[in-house]
Image 1 (spheres, chains in turn red, green):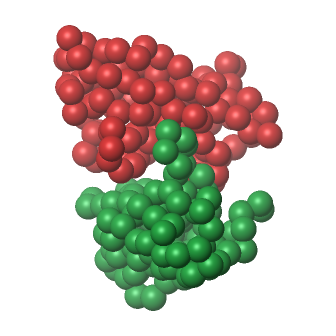
Image 2 (spheres, rainbow over the protein chains, first blue to last red):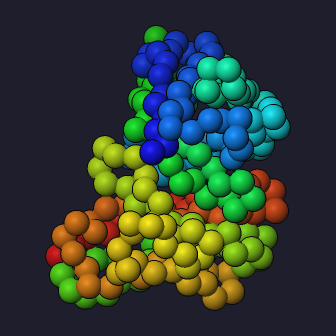
Length: 119
Length: 110
């Protein structure tokens, strides 16, 4: 059974960089699939942030592109997200998920982690 | 890329059928058969319910079905049950980005 688990600081100061990691178990990232990050501000809808392939190929949401970096570490079977210059608008629950390659849907999700941007 | 448009809320009585719409453009919903639907209960992660317009993953109830006509996709829940009360989101591939989500629909079982 594929399982994903997000980890990272729950509180980030404005203008700093938000960093999250998603640990994957039950499946080797090196075997394929894209891996993505999605966020959900409190009481609001879902927003796709970025996706990465095990080879390092990436896709970014154009609205966040300039502030986002997604990367993969196959040796640790994990992938990561960095979002720079955060503001209160970046406060959200951040989910990591597996993306079915070439079919564009998320089949496994992590439980999500709340990140609050506040001084 | 703008969010796909969904009704804010839909309600129905137990046993009834309801349909949630997801309206986009020819650059997303209308142009590709890569529409998926997700169910989200409060405080929980989204769960895949439908992929590629009308396919159900293993383990998802047959009461959930998907379809598409033109630029609008739909999720139908038949035989509505109390456990179906949740938020539902559609998602589609687009010519600009691989994913855009809908605005979300709150389903209430009366």
